[in-house]
Structures are given as structure tokens and as C-alpha cells.
Image 1 (tube, rainbow, N blue to C red):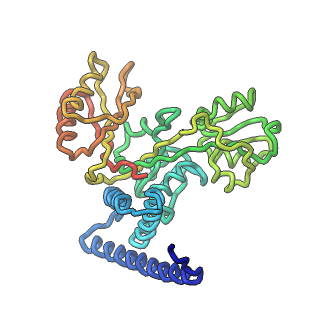
Image 2: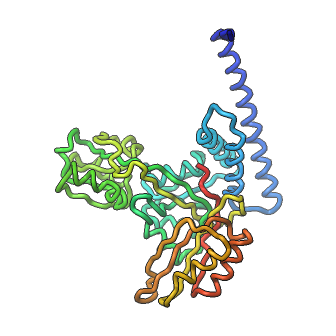
Image 3: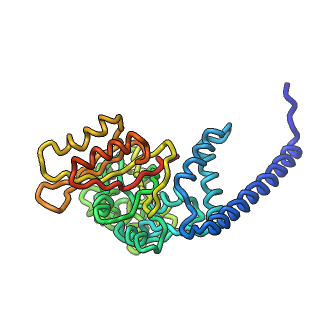
Amino acid sequence: MTAIIPLSELRKRIDEIDRQILELINQRANYAMEVAKTKIAEGETGTFYRPDREALVLRRIKQLNPGPFSDDTSVRFFRELMSACLALEKPLEVAYLGPQGTFTQQATFKHFGHAVKDIAVPTINDIFKTVENGHCQFGVVPVENSTEGVVAHTLDRFMTSSLQICGEVEIRVHQNLMGRMESLQDITEVFSHQQSLAQCRQWLSAYLPGIECTAVSSNAEAARLAAKNPNKAAIAGAVASELYDLNILEKNIEDDSNNTTRFIIIGHQQPSSTGFDKTSILVSTGNQPGALYKILAPFAEYGISMAHIESRPSRQGLWDYVFFIDLNGHRDDENVAKALKVLEQHVHLLKVLGSYPKAVI
């Protein structure tokens, strides 16, 4: 029979471990600052954040993790530690779709950690502009929802932007009905982002039939508007209810319990290959017979798997479309590079939007 360790002894051991942890994480921070000095000495002046390096570190943490902490818990801890160390090297500014309390802000913190300086901007187009003109090093924009499909504004903006996709992050989206009122009967209008309204259409039809639903720029903006009027409600994340002091009237009203939104990180970097990457491309074929076949054939020939394909009007001519495609692999991988070279010879336009590490958690 194993002897029971006295509580006082257990606490003493925990205190000693805490001391060692604190010493080690500060050692790590000191090394991070030395890394910054070395980079500056070598002439590097841009951001010190490297999405490929971070992804490799976090995947290594998952491989090394012995438990009892889950892999996700361990990764979240180390992401915050890396975020804090990076802030000591050089503060990182990241633009997101504001105001405070949006799912895009949650995605920002999940990907970069809480030590970044998060900058709220009003529209997806403004996120692109903020990064393009150098006011922020990176931006976080929604690109796809598991229920409602692609975010058209994001895809369309890539047609004119020189920014690269540097990473991705996924957020499980739980929608909540909130307001200053105490009862559903007091609601005269519901505000939310158009995607969120669509994700909750069955619930709204069943429990708020005939109530006007108004699309606004973000869920957090919906919460802000609801806070100003006792008869207006909002659909938003739980964080927004805390920020704007609203009552949550109903939780998790999304029609699909697995509702997930994918966000991408945009910036000027081109991450190196990690072995677990995606490549996103934009392809224009013009209005011609067999256009889609010409796109797909090179990937089949070189054994490249496609994670997603989406078409959008090119706005260059009637029935002229561009295709947005996510591939498994990095543009520097041999087979991916060969497939892209062949594809370029058979289309009007091929634009590589970025090769980047797949989301770690």
C-alpha cells in the first residue's frame, strides 16, 4: 500500500517546483532577448515572429507531452509563453475585425497569445489596408465557416492585395442571444453579423418568428448596439456579453453544434516549409471549355491533395471566374512546385497566396 504524503510536504514540493518553473521561464525569456540582439546584429529589422518556427516548436511540445495535461492545454501554455517572450524581443501589432469581443479577436489571441498588441479595425478591407501600409505586421481575417461557407469579402480582397497568408487558426463558434431585457418577449429586433444570423436561422425562426434581424459589421458591434437599447438583442460570443454588460438570454443557439470558423493570418512573410503545411492559390482560366479540368489535372498528376476549392466572379467579364484553392503541402515541396509550374502554363493567372503551417490546435 502506497503511503499517503502529508499535505504540508506536498505543498512544499509544489512550491519548490513553482520556483524552478519561474527560474526556467525567465531563463527562456533571457535567451529570447539574446535572439533579438543577434537578429539585429545580422541586420534584421522587421518582425521577429516566425510562424513556421512557432509551429515546429508547438508540434514538438505535443510530441514531448507526457501528460496528465492534454496536448491542447500544453500547447496553449507554451503559446502564451512564446507570446510573452516575443513581446520582450519586439512588440507585435496585429489587426483584427473589431470592436472588442469579436470571434476574430478570440482567434487573434489563440494564434498569437495575449502578449500581442491587438488593434481593432472596423472592416475586413481595413484589416488588409492596415497591414499593407505597415501600421500592423499581421492581420487576422475570417475566411470560412463550416456551416455557411466562405467569407466572400476576404477572398475578393486577395484579388488586389499583395499580402501573403502566413498561418491559420480555427475557432469553435458558440452563438449566444444577449440583451438588457430579461425575456424573449421584450425583443423587437436582433443584431448580428450576417454569417451569425445565418448560422442561427433555424433557432430564430422557431423562437423569435417575425422579429426583425439586422446584419451589422461584427457580433461585437451588435452587442454594443444592444447595450444602448433595452428592446434590442444581439447574437454574439460570451466575451461580448461581459464587455458590454448584457444578459445572456439563451446559450449556444447555433443550428450546428460543430460550428467552426477558420481564420487566416495575413502579412508580408513567406514561411518556410515545416512538413505540415498548406498552400493557397488563386487561379484564373478565363471563360473556356475544360477550364476546371486544366486546373485539377496537374495536382492529380503529382499526387497533390486539395483541401478546398471555391469559385468567385472575377469581375473582369461575364461568366469569368477565379478559383481559390487550398492544397496540402508547401510551394517549396518538390511535387507541389512541379504541379504549380505545369498549372501556370495552362491558365491566364496563377497567384500563390501563401504557403503556411497548418493550425496546430
